[in-house]
Length: 148
Image (tube, rainbow, N blue to C red; front, top):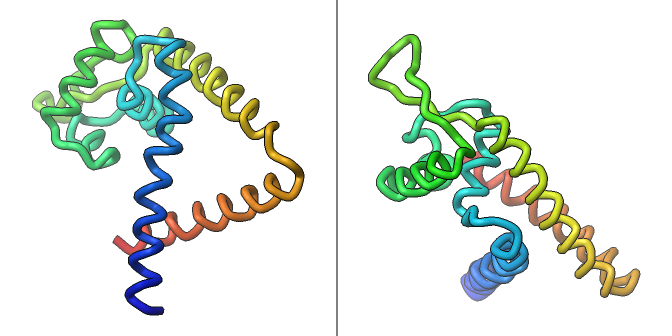
């Protein structure tokens, strides 16, 4: 593959991220005070159960001070809580509260419905192309991440 093709792929991926982020974050801002970063943190907590601040930072590729700001805001809103690790009291784990889980699911549903309403504007051919393309891109990105 030529350098021109690799450069084009990189540019396309860089362009896709803000477009997708904008599609998700705009309805999120109308639904809740939770930032998109907060939603990502809550999503990882839902998936993994509990995570340390360092692990959340690794998941999101963010510095610990930035994660601390996001987590503190989520704690203030009652969505997550800190819990000392019983094996090592120096480690503080973060977990979703019942309120956090319920609100996360509600907001996720609203965002999903918003995206679905936008997808309904596409014709059958466009939907088929987008379906195949997103499945392929997802698979390739998972493959890239597994090689890191």
